[in-house]
Image (cartoon, rainbow, N blue to C red; front, side, top):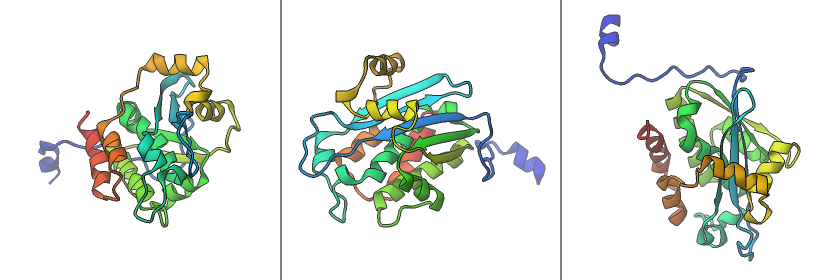
Length: 223
C-alpha cells in the first residue's frame, strides 16, 4: 500500500500546520481598508493597503488598491447593504491581496495578519461571518488557500493606528494621505496589477460560493 502511495504520480500537497500558535519565526502582514459613508464621493481615493515583513522584520511586499468608484459608492449586497459600509468584507481584501501576490513566499509556514477590525478575527476563528455572505465567501476562499499552501494563517487584532505599522497602512489606504515614503515603498515593489479574479468581482459582486474555488484556482494556477 505504501509503495503504491509513493509511486502515485499525482501532485502532492504539503501537510498543513496543526492548529497551534505561530512560531517565533514567522512572517507578518499588516493591512487596512477604508470604507465610504453613505452619500460620500470617493474623492480621497479610499481603498485597501498592505505591507509584509519577513522573519527579520524586512519589507518583502507592499501594495495598495483604490476601490472602483461604482463598487464603493453604489454597489450593494443581496440584503441592500452598500459595500462602502461593509467594513469587515473590505478588510478581508487586505488579507486576500498579499496571498494572491506572494503565495510562493507564504508556503508551509506561519503567517500573522494584523488587522484593526476585530470582527475579521472572530469571523476567521469561526470560519464564517454571521449575516455577511460576502465576507463568509472570502473567508472560505482564504481557508482553502491556507490548506493548499500547507500554511497556518493567524489573524490578530491591532487597534487602529496603535503602532507605526498600522499607522502606515492606515495612511496608505487613502491616496490623499500617502506620504513620500509610502509612495517610494509601493513603487519599490511595483505590485500595482491586481489579479483579474478580484477586479471581475468588483464589477459584479455576486454572493457566489463558487468564487471561493476561483480564488483557490487563482493561486494554484500561478505556481
